[in-house]
Image (cartoon, rainbow, N blue to C red; front, side, top):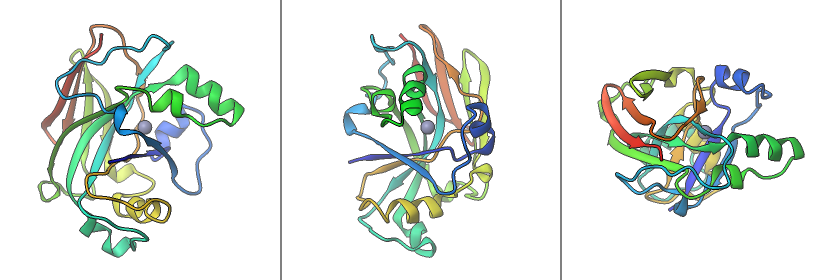
Length: 202
Ligand code: ZN
């Protein structure tokens, strides 16, 4: 399986990183080796200067598809989840400044937290609420209605470049409020009131 991530999908997050607003979705990939094993803590990698959390709504693809029209995109997913796109922000900023690929900052081992999935019929897809809580404090409070590109648009766009396969996961971008993690932090992801993941930083 592959992990397809969308960058810069929420205006307020674009502003906090002082990025340019894109005219089309920003896409990058994570390999399957980036997935943090369930119930495992996240170990801050030795190379890291500053790891940022980014909580994101996840979409699990349920069948193979290419050049998917937006009006048919809803047929390609049944489940919505929540996860974290861990990012080495210092390194990413350096790579971005040089126009280099982000993989070292975004695709390292453990950088993809994939929490629980729920049937999409549990949600009002026009406004899915989600939060990231660290040590009991809400640090990111998102709502999918503020995405620049909604799930169906993303599936259609991404499938122009990559054949989507059953089991692939799309990370749909993070809202404002990103910040650094520290050893002993406890991160809890909440998707419409459901605890989708809980993990410790080491
Ligand atoms: Zn992200």
